[in-house]
Amino acid sequence: MMAAPAVLGYAGAARMNDHIIGPLVIAFGTMAAWEFMRQVRWVNFALGLWLLLSAWVLREGHPAQWNGAACGAVLLLLALQKGIYRPERFSGGWASLR
Image 1 (cartoon, rainbow, N blue to C red):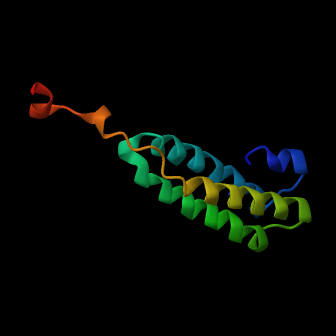
Image 2: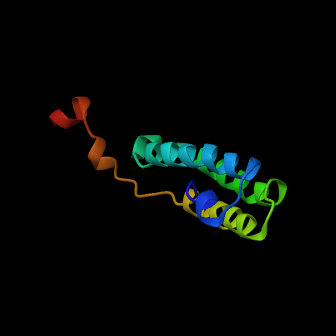
């Protein structure tokens, strides 16, 4: 997504949007990878929704529009994944002494 403006050749607000949203998606996706921070994935859901909507608000050309819509849709689907819950991995305290 961050390389798309250079590859597809678009500029302006669409380029700035991709350069701002891209690092945010990476940061929140990395945080959501940990089980205790799983709820942060909803921030990526909101960012994906913005990418999907901004495809028609900010984009000037068809390649940029389809790139924004595709990245937004994929991000929405990935943000809906719950992950694996493993309660035995986080045992500790007095329960671990028994």
